[in-house]
Length: 304
Image (tube, rainbow, N blue to C red; front, top):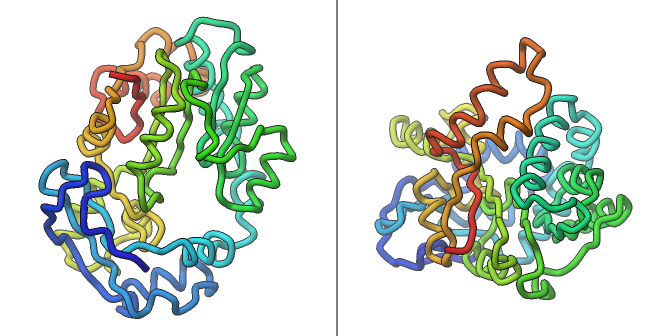
């Protein structure tokens, strides 16, 4: 484990402790046993789960985070090997519709044939978004750490590259989904991605909204008392950066990125499945809240 003594977003060293518990404590130990299905080792037992908040940009984050060796152990050993079956093969029609809506929005945003769009899926996982973008004709590159997922990505046609090798100003669109909450050095990564973004490009950052979880943790004072849904956005060892809307926007601004309010018409024009009764409220409400009240942790950024 290693310690982060500065805010990983704005680099301020003015921090306040939100919560602290040993990895051997009952709440954390119970979570680890359930989440990793008995695969977790004792590598972190001597360390503490310490959540702190930056007094400057308000980003909450875990002060002690895994080093490279432990990260490799977590993502290539602890995480259940059956994850592909649970996620990729169990994707529903609504899940694929949502991906299609996002890709259609990007294509409409740039207003050029899909084949002219160079896109990067950073942390592509099981390649759900990448495969949808390829289906629409986009030129898709990807960055991933997990060897298992890299093999899968190459098998479906992603041009897998290394973060350090990304060409400058190459990509019209950079997609990140549930990635930045995991990064021990998110600022360095976003800086590199911003360099790879075309002058008129767009980068999407979508992370769990940790705001409600942090409020409940402050109220209960016990990580183990939280529901699994509220533990997830502040998960020990993995979700080491706990963003809300304000801290996410502030994070982008520190590197010269400004939030872009999605076009109302294009959001609705990308929606699908709205004639199904169970989808109607979702399809009608999502564009409204992203355009009129953009307070979520799904944010499009462009160069300021």
